[in-house]
Length: 113
Image (cartoon, rainbow, N blue to C red; front, top):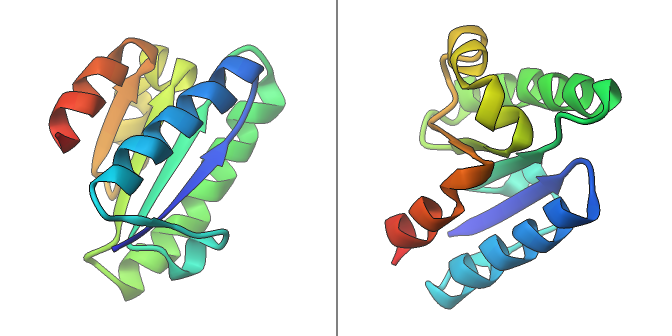
């Protein structure tokens, strides 16, 4: 299984994305550099900058098109924006498989372990 992580925002998000990648890689998943070839796409979001939120929703729109072609594609949203806008994300993007806020990192680790 191949995964792609899009990191938006601060240095903390880069660190969290690296940790998620390590966990997934340890489970045998392969990190790739192109979301269109992935089996799982995670958008690690930021809420500090409006442009990061805009980029997240823009990417989610493109991922919706991919999900329609490949219903098995797993799409997740993590990070700060997911923390405070989980209901909006789930409402606007019903095709998203999971939303984990910034405090959900421990849950992420437990889920894939």
